Length: 291
Ligand code: NDP
Image 1 (spheres, helix red, strand yellow):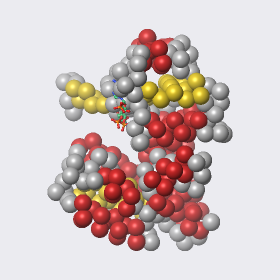
Image 2 (cartoon, helix red, strand yellow; image 1 turned 30 degrees about the vertical axis):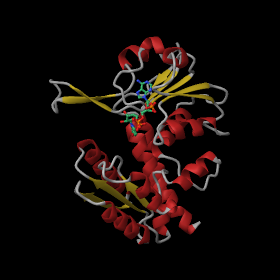
Image 3 (cartoon, helix red, strand yellow; image 1 turned 45 degrees about the vertical axis):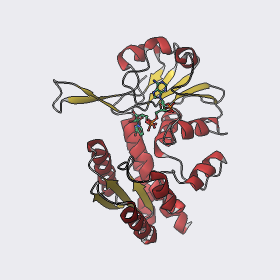
Image 4 (cartoon, protein in one colour; image 1 turned 90 degrees about the vertical axis):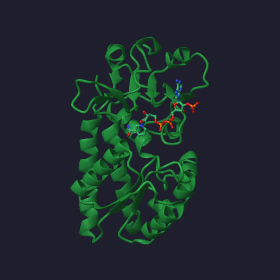
């Protein structure tokens, strides 16, 4: 079975739209600021997609595209202004910023109540503490929703996550091990220092690949009947593609898919769901002001 993130994202957007309409009927329009520093083409594409989707849903959307020469102080003062703006309920600083920017310091400066990316230390702690008043990072939240929507039994399942980043792997592990729907799994997190990766991944009922290596997960690394969620977004050269490249995941889809009971495609999988969860988190931030 192919788990279509694009289709599930449509369902999430429809739910989000209803919530936005309900807020608007109470006189509140949710607002999201998306900030990009520099001219990384992939980041530009993500920021435009987020801004466009927000506008389509009726979220008040504010896009700041700043030059790569923006200083730490300039970015901090923008964050201060966005924190203070009552029309904005969510703030997202597109990662990664240019190397001269101290990203953790910028994240710490965001008001945790507007941190719809879920990267602020307070929100990281709330996830670890099973405190539902925080925000959960959008990509792992979207992966979990994939599993729930596809009817995948996570309780008691052996889940293996490839990658331990703060954006994907680590919060994914916390979500899958938490009690409740989409959780209760037995979780292993593997990374570049893990010994004998294929032996680890072959134990997975649910395998989540988030390492940023095109086609890294090959058929011999996957158990027959496993569920595979491919988070990877990698550009590979393709001379016959109109742009000269195409996007592939971390999984060798063609050879792995026949072994799986369910798998997500790239593109059209986790990517659209990440945006859907960002919109949902923004609306949650606004709802918390009036509930
Ligand atoms: P990071 O580079 O921050 O982390 C990569 C992780 O993979 C690290 O933990 C690293 O291990 C591990 N890793 C790298 N190479 C290997 C290897 N050969 N064997 C085992 N583990 C390895 O990446 P992100 O988590 O930010 O992103 C991962 C992928 O997901 C990327 O392709 C990215 O583009 C994509 N992504 C997609 C999103 C979406 O919306 N669909 C959103 C965010 C990311 P170590 O810690 O030891 O270095």
